[in-house]
Length: 387
Image (cartoon, rainbow, N blue to C red; front, side, top):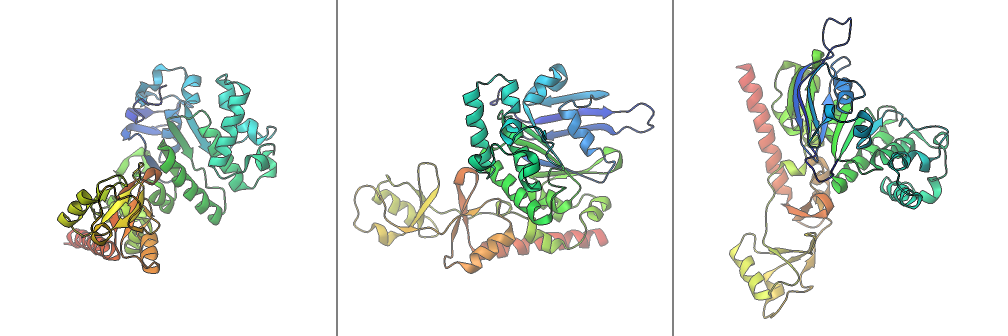
């Protein structure tokens, strides 16, 4: 399975019927999970969310329908071969207790006949990636780890062969709330770097809102009650079932779970260190606001630059200007961004996405206006529903 292929997952009219049951566990579901996104399947017990996940990697077989994984018909592939290209993380990590951490993580690469040196290098790389020092943890056994550490090893194992797709079935449900929050934050950090296609099953609405790029809210009988972004679900729940499922406190949830990426970012003139000073000055004077931002070769923000920094300068702008504040991540919540902007001395803060690449800027006023507009939309919808 080519990592460069289409990484989307498509369920097309998928049904699963078990013998002796009157109603299907999954009933004619059609759903597209875009490549590079986290899609959360959210619903109560019996809504078919775990069944749908297991259908994707053929732990169970569909009664009818088609499943396309990373551009290939999953039902036309050897099931074992398919699973080697799909990372799978379950509750309690599912580690083999008689194997060391290194052996657990390196299991799939060994099955793929990687040489020992390559496997060892990949194990150390992944332990580093999930925040576990290889020298400390490589030779430990699962019983010597905390629940949170076991889950980190489970994530490392799922990533071992660099699969384009990951399935995560209630992976953080068995740990305490503080550890769970740390694991969620770690997953978001990893996703920014790796951009996997992730299907994540949970019954926790707050976890879904925090992690999901999109959320599929499932009702009994695997009815997809709503499939949308967290912001769309908070502002415009599709029906009474969705509204009941997400509960009250919409205004606080907008702050806690809406992301900086959900608001219109302000753009300022851009420049690179090698750009000609006169050209940059002209660009700044022609735009609004009357300053620019200097980006490095990877489009990471470096400095603000103002007209007074460029007066009489010839040639490249070089290191002129003033360091920016530490950027805000596009995945940060509005609450996190507001807290940052209140505490720092800078009026403008750059916003960055995956790999720290610049996306735009925010100010306290930007966020306050965005929140007002979100609240107005939510209020208008409730008024319309009540009329």
